[in-house]
Image (cartoon, rainbow, N blue to C red; front, side, top):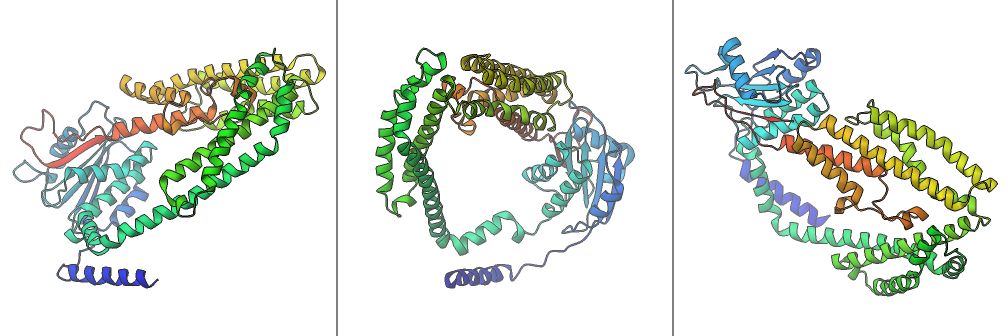
Length: 485
């Protein structure tokens, strides 16, 4: 606490010295708020009181213009056209700039553009105009037009005529001057502490799995010894088992290495990677010995076959249960033909799963046949999800470039080709026999869909600002720009 107090005191003294000569910033509500909601998307009862209470640094007139355009429109050109026709007082006397003291916020909810325009005494940098527009975009993407416009104007009030001593650059410089010496040490300590915590967590995970594998080692060998090698499923699981002991020995070596690390050693990033490797290796062995046990129980119809079968159907049941949540998401095209096909398939499979279990119990089908049915059903679900992915992409993407971006994310999620899509080993017979990308699961679809939408939204918002006023703008050069959301 003593060090913290000294640092805080130093910050206070330095800030007091730096700000001693600076004038206090004004906090003034808008001189006037003019609303031209030609698109009819703003709730005036909410909007006007909210904007009228926003504090600016200097007396500022706020003008809001909305209209329904198209994606191909130049919002800057439209705002200038509207101002010339309806509000010439928004333009300077020489007709070349926006009027002093003015801040215009413009929205096209159909063409999905947002723009900001200022008088010369209120103008900010292009980067700051982007900042103001970006403050509204998440809300606009969710069709919250009133709240998004308020958020944009509020961000504008924070940046327009902002005193130098409230700028991000100054605050960073001031903090660096005060805390530069201690920051490096503090960060170093925090990183080491966090690494040590993570290492111990991973070590505990690895030890739990390794203990399970070690305790069941003899039972695993006995189970493997009675799996019918002639079975398509049994033969593949036995192939995995043939490397089991070698992998166990590797995990043992890793266990010895990580347990030899001191507390200080656990604080180092390279050793965290080593501990995580140990934990992952032990966890996969722990899952595989369960699969070996389930394969033996199910294929030989042992006493535990019913529980083993339930574990095989669990991933598929989870997919079916998660479909409705997926289809109810925004932009998920839940009322489409492909969504109806998914719901119909879900209802059919939930009935079929009960029938398959009953026939297994009666001996009417073999375990292999039941596994074949489960594989075919999951394959069919994968195809239906791929079809629905096309529907979602067609519904959200505005052009082929956006469609390609979304499709790439969906395909990468299924294939697990990127680090962010790390596909965990599925502890089931089908998960052992088939590669991780063989089945397109609902969680994988969700991941690819969310990332695809985010990627396209970012591309829309980050595609660069439009600063010109089009062919009809003439020599007009007022400060302003627009961008898409």
